[in-house]
Amino acid sequence: MAFLPHAPRWRALAVLVAWLLLLARSGAFQTASDHAELGLQIFLGWIREDGKNDKPANTRRNPEVADRAQNQTEKARREYQQSLNIYRSLAQKDPETFLPYVAATLNDLGIIDSGQNRVEEARKEYEESLNIYRSLAQKDPKAYLPKVAATLNNLGILDRDKSRMEQVLRMYRELAQKNPATYLPYVALAHNNLGNVHAAQNQMEKAGKDYQEALKIYRELTQKDPETYLPYVALARNNLGNLHAAQNQMERARREYLEALKIYRELAQKNPETYLPDLATMLNNLGVLDSARNRMTEAGKEHEEALKIFRDLAQKDPDVYLPYVAATLNQVGMLNRDQNQIEEALKTYRELERTDSQTFRPEVALTLNNLGILDSAQHRVEKARNEYEQALTIYRELAQKDPEDYLPDVAMTLNNLGILDRDENRIAEARKEYEEALEIYDAFAKRDPEQFTIDVERLKKLLKELPKYR
Image: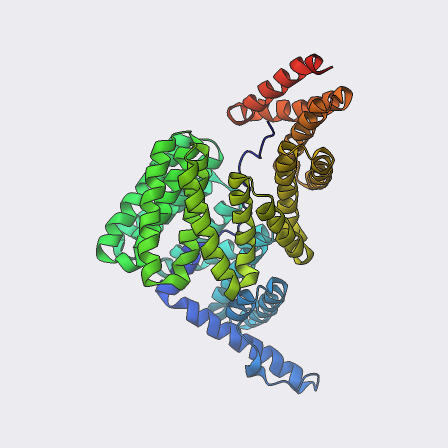
């Protein structure tokens, strides 16, 4: 049989909740926005005085709200850079007033750049912001230590830096001892982020403890403020479910997913605009799990409900939700062996690829691989070969830039192509494809035996059996 990839590689922008919560709770978010607008007005005022622009300054829109809403990231980045230049100039004359805005704008730029995979730029911006906040915290620790912690949190997320995340946790615990009402949420968030780092480093027991601690705190907070913290309980449940699934503890994972699903249904009834996307995503997670446990009826219902929600959302906001429609079509199509649904997914991904190749080219390759699996099963050999070869070309191209992420996909596609060639008695081609796939998997298994040893053993077995097909 052909094999699907190990796990979907969702390249989602990490929402840096600590920073946004901190600004929202302190009132600084509106202040920062107001000053960003003021800075742009000053800048445009200078231009008007030079006779270079007669457009009124107050027609400029807030980049945080308008540009992100329109997904115009590059434009937003330019406007933040404009603001930063203005604040730097103002800070030279009045550092006490404007250095905090330099730091805040650097942090905002870091968030944008990390989301665009500009890792080096984001790191420099975060580090400069951190240095400023540390300097300010020496004079006013009450005001600026929380921002030191938030910026460290962003750096820790960027680099998956365990030591930084542990430092963040210690800082928030100290702050929570003095002011638990304000800072306990950040303690929970720090546990959650540290759990993500531990999970990424395959330290599952430590990750589980962090997720459990986050869940415990969020439950306590929900007793007093369910409207704010119930969504975080659901998120913590989902994280625990993901962790249990990664450890092949499927029943425990399913219990956590069902608890999260129950919460998201409740939230979506009260606020569908905000929580229907979370409900659909949770349904898809549960569907993947049920499919892996051979609960095909339940999985089909879960994916179909998710697909309906995402289709409805895409009617109103196609830019945001069409990718989710395509991903769910992929899942439902493979579950139902429905060629039409997979082809619709491919058509959608190809359209999305035209505007964002970096994000959606991998999904085109994945969908081509899925079509190859279906066509191979239906003995449409040449069509399957063409789809596998297209997928392989894309994955090779991606692996040149990012071998860690995409070489396993190269190996997976070679595996599938080798099976097709073996069944067509093209033994020399099959052997070559198996051997290249084995070489890739063997290198990865040395670093991560738990994930890749099974692939190594499968390829060795396939190679050993090849003479039987002569």
